[in-house]
Image (cartoon, rainbow, N blue to C red):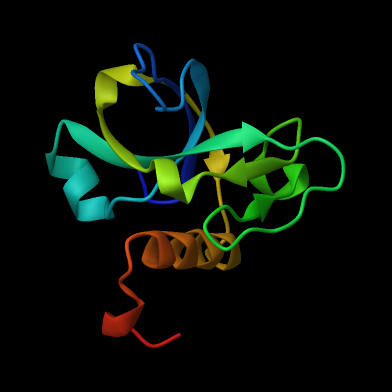
Length: 118
């Protein structure tokens, strides 16, 4: 399991405002941790309809880039660590450029920008 992998994940049972159901997610945890841990950290994806506007903490991934049938929004404000047993299959791996957009969304959501320079 490598960072940037697009994987289908069973996120149920969800509680309250957590994003539910089986959906694609992007692995954002580092490769070394992914190799030794029974968990991975993911950002869920949600399909986009029409001309969606780009949001800083929810960058848009075009279907051609994500290996998915529809354009998606990376929900960096819904980041979570899951057991690897929730992963059903791997679809593909995102480019460095797309991962930078997701990283920026995570940095802004977690208010880490004071510790880094863009």
